[in-house]
Length: 455
Ligand code: SAJ
Image (cartoon, protein in one colour):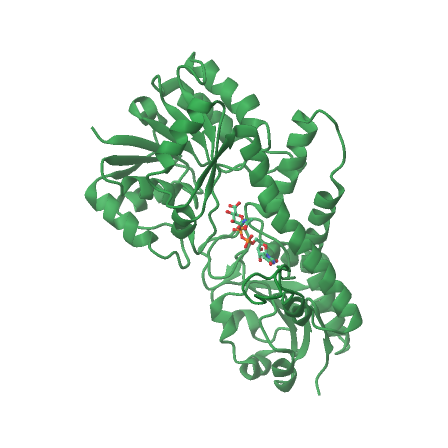
C-alpha cells in the first residue's frame, strides 16, 4: 500500500508539495482543491498533467506531467479523501482582511472537514503562514472537536512553513532547510520523518509556536530591510545621488577583511515601487495579531509597523514622480494617459497578489489620470489590463515600470520615445540607465535615483 499524502490547497505551495511527494517511490498524493470560480479550473488541468502556474517555474511542468502519467498524483474537490490518508498538508491562503486581521475562513473550514474524515494516527501539518499561537489555539481545538480525538495521542499535528518563491518553487522546497514545529515531540518526530523524503537540506526541529514566530519574523526581517532601502532611496533622491550605487558600495563591506568578497557583512536590499505578494505585506500584521491575541505583555511593535507604512507608501511615491516629471512638460496628471508596465508583484511570474501595480493604478485614478495596465505574463487580474504593449504606450503621457519582467528589459527606449505623447519614463525597479533614457530624449525619474532631464 503506497503512503498516501493529501495536500489541501492547489496553489504556489500546495501544487509543488503534492507533486514532489507523488514522485517518491512508495508514495501517492491527492491534491484537494475547491471547485471555486477563482481556482476550480486547476483541478482538470492538473489531472491532464498540465501545470496551472504561469511564468518560469523550472522543473514543475515536467514533474506534474510525470506523476500524473504514473498515476501517483490525482486532484479532487472532495476532502473526504483524507479518510485513509497517512498525512494531510494544509496549504490554503491565509490573507489578512481590511483590518489587517487574519482571515482564517478557509483554514477553519479545512480543519473542521479534515477532522471529520481523518483516521486515528493521522499527521496533520499546517504549511500556510499563520499568526503565532494559531496551531495550538485555533487549529488543534478545531481538529480535536470535529474528530473527537486528542492531538499528540490519537493524531499528530505540526506547523512546518513553506519557503517557496515564485520562479524557484521546486528548488526552494527541496534545497532549503525547513523548520518543523510539532504541538508535541512525537508530532515533530513524525513530521520530520515525512519531510526527510523530500527535503535534501537540514530539518530543524522546534515547537509549533517557535516555528510560527520564525516564519513571520523571517519575512518581516526582509520587509524591514526593504523598508530601510526604500527610505534610503528617498534620501538619495533628495540629495541627487543613486541609491543603487550606494547599495552596491555599502554591500562591499566584508565580514572578514581577509576574505572581502566571500562574506559581505551587509546585504542592503533593493528600493522599489513597493512590496507585494502573499507574504511580506501581511506577515508583519500576522506577527502583531499573534502578539495582541496570545502575547502576555502588550506593546506596539514600532519598527515592524512603520516598515509596513514605508513599504505601502512607495506606490504613492511613484505617482508623485509621475506628477513631478509631467510638470516639467507643463502637463497636469489630471487627464494624463499613464501606461503601467507590469501587473505581477514580482518579475517573470504571473502572481498578482497584493501587487503594488494595483495601488499605483488606483492612486493615478485618484489624481484624475487614465492608467493603462500591461503585463506579458499574467493570465487574469481584477483590473482591466492589456497584453498589447503598443496599445498601452501609444500617445501615453508617461510610462511607469512597476514590475521588472525580462520582456521590458529589452525595450528600445528610442522606439518607446517615438510612441509616447509626452516623453516621460518613471522607473520603479532600476530597470533602465538614466543616461540611456536621457539620450533617448526621455524625462527620467527613478525610485532611489536623483533627477536628470532631457539634454
Ligand atoms: N522587493 C523589494 N526589494 C527587495 C526584495 C523584494 O522591493 O530587495 C519586493 C518585490 O518586488 C516584491 C516583494 O518585495 O514586490 C516580495 O518579494 P520577495 O522576493 O520577498 O518574494 P516573495 O514574497 O514571494 O518571497 C518571500 C520570501 N521570503 C524571504 O525571503 C524571507 C520567500 O522565501 C518566502 O517563502 C515567501 O516570501 C513566502 O511564501 O513567505
